[in-house]
Amino acid sequence: MVFLRKIFFIVMITFIIVLITAQIASTFLLRPILEREIRQIFKVPVRIDSAGANLFYASFWMKGVRMKNAPGFSRPEALSARTISIDLSLLSFLTSQFVVTRILLKDPQFLLEINSKDESNFTYFADRALEHFNKFQLRKPKLIHLITNYTLEKFAVKNGDFQLIDY
Image 1 (tube, helix red, strand yellow):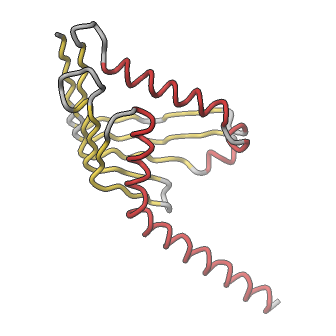
Image 2 (cartoon, rainbow, N blue to C red):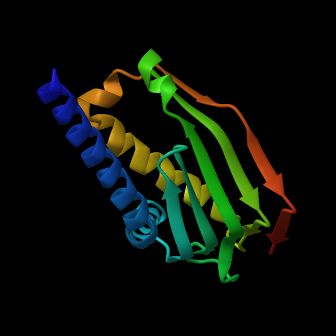
Image 3 (tube, rainbow, N blue to C red):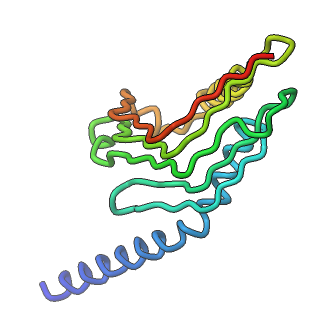
């Protein structure tokens, strides 16, 4: 019994150390990973001032997000936000669901631009996102096949600004 208790404590301490290390590493590693992935999806430069995750509450955040506009459009940025945070429900995975409990955008500025060819920059971004997720659908891991329901519970925007420019 004493041997099992020692093994249990060693496993628990190792788990806590790994979790704390991952929490600290997320502040250094998450920003470049998110920038690269968003850049690959939308094919435009993206800058994130800082990013991090709270592994204890299953949430991650990005501060100082700036996404350049699509090629062929005059304005420099299509999206900027002071903070973007996303909270997930880890318990939902036990029921084959993927639940995003909250997406919060603080001080976002969206720019919808229609150029002289009647093309929209949002159409460009939507097409890139759809193309990426279709590729993901074809090669999605077996674990994701177990998820049968996707839910977004709350979407909030604080002090947002939406601009429409039509040439």
